[in-house]
Each structure stands twice: as C-alpha cells, then as structure tokens.
Length: 132
Image (cartoon, rainbow, N blue to C red; front, side, top):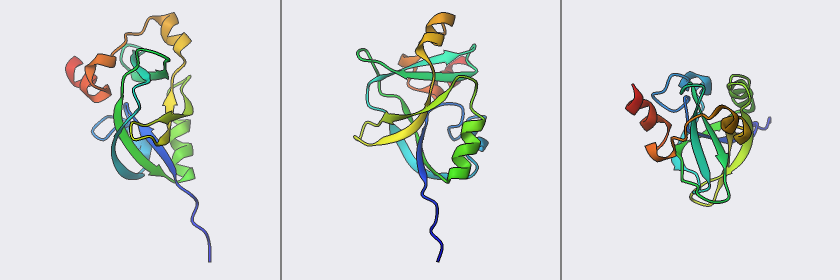
C-alpha cells in the first residue's frame, strides 16, 4: 500500500483565480471554496496591474478575498515556478482562523516603484473588472 502525498492548501487571490488568465497554473488542483484573509494585509497592483502584490501590515489591513485549493506537491511546485519575479510563498492567516500558503510580494519593492494600493477595490478580480 502506498501513501498518497499530503496536499498543500494554497490561498489564491490574484491572476490564478477562477475566471482569471493564469488559472491554468493551478493544474486542476482541488477547489476547496471561497476564502478571505484575516484583515492584516494590503493589496497592490504590481507592474501596471500585471499581477497583485500582497503583504502583511501591523495596522490598516484589510481582508483580501480569494480561493483555497488543495494541491499536490507537484502542482504546488509548478505554481511556484510560474509565479512572477519576487513573489515568495508564505503562510497567511485566514479570516476563519486557519492558515494557508499564499504568494506575497516584498513591500519594499511596492514602495520603491510606487505601485498603487488597490485594497479598497474588493479584491483582484473586482479591480481587474473595474479597469478593463
């Protein structure tokens, strides 16, 4: 009897959401449902809206809407390898008290380039819909 590899729970809040252009990067991972972070993050439009950048803050954070997926280690590695430059995996706190892995973006680079804070748009998909 062989053990199945343990799945990794990943929080998606940007261009890999259902209906967004990079959803195929999830490679048929198991969709677990809608979710949101605890209200301790900010959301920015990086590189002229090419992808989102989120990071944790001590004050002034919001709850970022997204989706949870259960990924095999192979699916996770593929996703990680296809993330934009500078994004890095890190555990995020979810609104329900749980945690998941998400891909964050360095706040210092957001500040350096002055990428806009889009936290009030209601998430990445809402921001993209409003800017089309």
